[in-house]
Length: 158
Image (cartoon, rainbow, N blue to C red; front, side, top):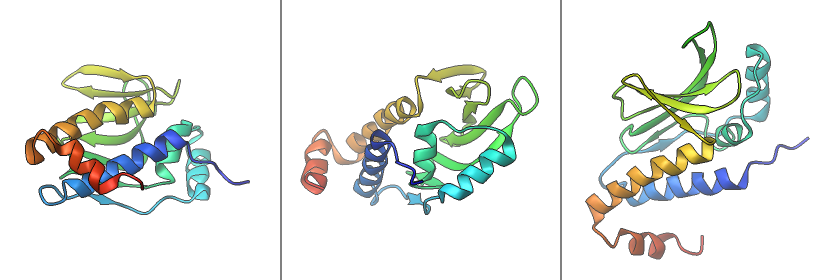
């Protein structure tokens, strides 16, 4: 059976790649190769957990990635402990300043913790959308207020 990648996550992935290309003169980014569905399913089986559909779609696009000089670093999922033994899945870090992004093994919710403050997201797409606001502020800082026009000129019609 073929796994269908969530189209919203595919759009987010393409946007992230385009933004990284747009800012490549100023910030380095790297998108690793996609994971194979069999590897993801084996990880789920080995860890007795089902990854959320949107996050699994992201892994099928890139198993690991470094976005804009490690603003976001997506890593292969690992099991961790927050409140109870093995209750979280660690999926990313933000800005390298200690903010870590997790998925709850209990309910599949995506959340991050920074300096003791928990931020919950509706889903993985919501997390990507909120982070893209900072990426867009970087574009404005480096390329000016008309960065959106530059983006459209380069990537419109892809």
